[in-house]
Length: 82
Image 1 (cartoon, one colour):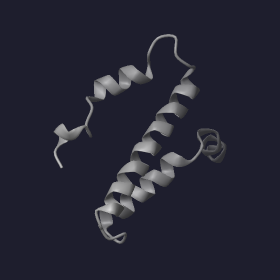
Image 2 (cartoon, rainbow, N blue to C red; image 1 turned 90 degrees about the horizontal axis):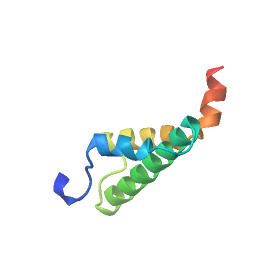
Image 3 (tube, helix red, strand yellow; image 1 turned 30 degrees about the horizontal axis):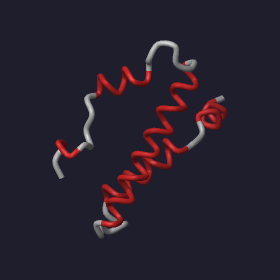
Image 4 (spheres, helix red, strand yellow; image 1 turned 60 degrees about the vertical axis):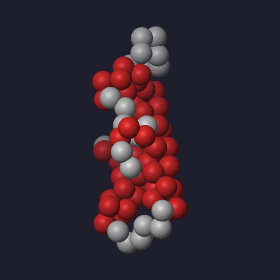
């Protein structure tokens, strides 16, 4: 699949979207970013599963680990840092 099919968006544009003036406070912006990232990873993992890729594939395992990391609520992750 090529990047021309809608997967890639310029990083600069994503950052502008997350820091639009008048938007939420920084904690809410971070939470919104992680929610968006989690949703995108979930969709990607569903596509991989539908394509018949083995769940034991190294990339699939790494994507699942990343998904579980970004799916954690931000507040709970901060509580574990204390």
